[in-house]
Image 1 (tube, rainbow over the protein chains, first blue to last red):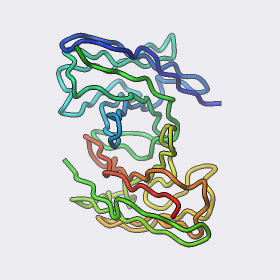
Image 2: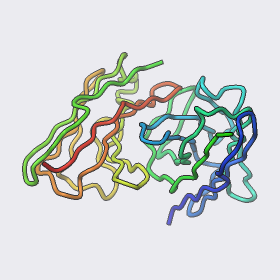
Image 3: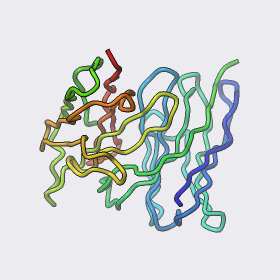
Length: 124
Length: 112
């Protein structure tokens, strides 16, 4: 059974750093395409980043240069390193697996599995 | 960036009646491979989003056949043939044709 379990969220001051984790089971992260998607309180969904099976990464402009997506194949886990956090980064962060494949900056398929999310609150 | 718009943003529904949500993209989502890189999600209250329809018209695994997706290019529609109480939540459209992938603002569906 495919499962994604996020962790690492919490309360952090503006300018601080946080690393989110996404533990995967039932599939292999290294051969799949996985994204982080966030949702500010009471707001809609916002795509954050994606990592391809081959290691290629893409980011939303709002986080580019501050966030880094990575994975540990030995742990079958995905990460999101978040630096220089701002109040507007406050959100529930979900990891989501793509059902399909990606090439260049295009992904054929939707996100078929999502984690339960981890809440990040940036506030002084 | 590709902008996704949805209408209506709020949709009160009556159980047993049909319902329809529209989504429009600022540029065509029809790829040269013939697929529309367009998907529908439902986020039930307090839950993570779930995939309903992928590539414009394909129901995801386990999705009841009362849900159907149609459209091509820039205009897409999600239809529920007969709404059930469990269908309440926020429906989002999303494009994966190019990064940054973008979602529509969401359509909140609730029972009248």
